[in-house]
Length: 249
Image (cartoon, one colour):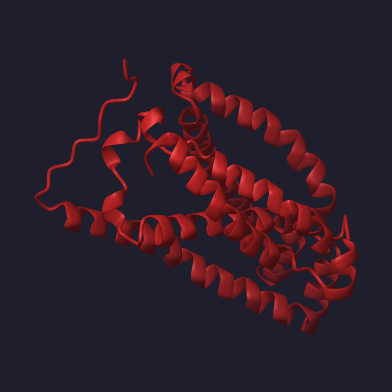
């Protein structure tokens, strides 16, 4: 018996509904992101020209930089800092909720575990990691972003090859009615193998604080580009074999 109910959507207004959902989500994400990224770039560029900002930036703490920026307004600046610190809770709440959904999406069995249990487990893991990472925030952030970049390159390669090569860019070839049926979905073995094996070349091409590969030492960090290209190349034959064994896309 299926644990999930089928997704039932009528044909009337289907395209309009999808467009609305896309634009609501896209604007909601990009709307606040662009101004904040521009503001961050402006602060980073101006910090070297303001002595107090420069000293705070050298400390490696984002909080120190913000405190230096807001220090001229006295108590109001401290109030703004407190609000900004508390706002992180709201930001993390959405992230933790997404993590709980990801856990439940791994296997149908995991849906039997209440979602708040996953939230508690995630929080218990995050607190000690955050405390340790706070000792050197920017260095740890740079390391983390570097690792995520390699993984994301492989993921993008798989998505693009799957969509444009195997599904010919046709969105109708994705069936929303089988999302809860594991046997009707791609097993994902081809994607995992292609992504994992690409790191045989990604690692020598790394140039990170914690590791510099022999190729990366001479050329700079090429891990992202290599991950994308190698994953795309490997995914093609692996996916063909996967389709032949499974009998469906």
